[in-house]
Image (cartoon, rainbow, N blue to C red; front, side, top):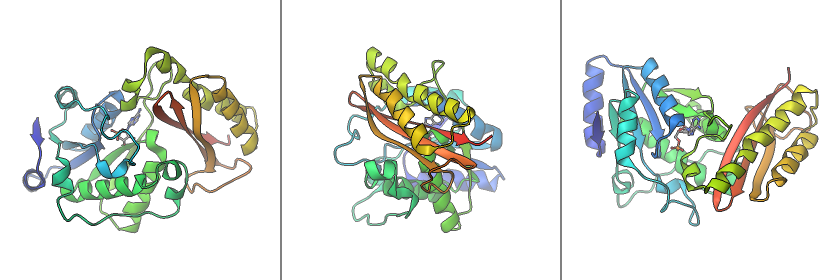
Length: 282
Ligand code: AMP
């Protein structure tokens, strides 16, 4: 497995692979790889001849008071994990390779970025769309793999790819969870043992909503308030947002029709965790 740090070398590798008729998958990540990331990589390997994983903690998607500096980084462990998943290349640029002096171009997606994480993390999706656009231009993959863990991110990127007529297929992989239900996340590494236990409140509160819907409760405010009440039973948890919007348009609704996204952002101590589920009328 190769580790490539420059755009020029990455382009050279891709040019050669394409000359050989190989199909290419890209899995964008911020590293500190876990089983969620590895699932994306394995699916990418099944779909394409060559898998490129980018590992880049993208400064433009972090707000000034967020955890950019202390975001976990572990290139040695990541290299071993990626190699075991059949990855051919890790693309690991430095920030100045991606944003050299004079850099001035950003992508803004309107509408769906104005709620959920877009509201609580101003500028976040501008940074995400910009870096993913750059990675797609550099790697020119046939397919790019993303996790439903970041459900809003998937919708934003689908909008970008459609609006800019980008020639790539976005593949979405379901949320990978620990055995006890906690959605896997690089940020779980920040949790103490007590906080790790408290973090279970996210998936448990999603279950509350799923059960209500299964029993025929379709009133959004009722479902939402039950979810909030469940989260409030955990003393270490503090809600950032609990929202339900229709899916995939992300518009406000008062009664569940067809599909809705229930999305949570909850602080456990200093760590902000997100999780989501699709509520569906059966
Ligand atoms: P990150 O490194 O957190 O930016 O994540 C890189 C990619 O992995 C994104 O497309 C995420 O949605 C995806 N991902 C992260 N955690 C999970 C998970 N638990 N299940 C599925 N996909 C995930």
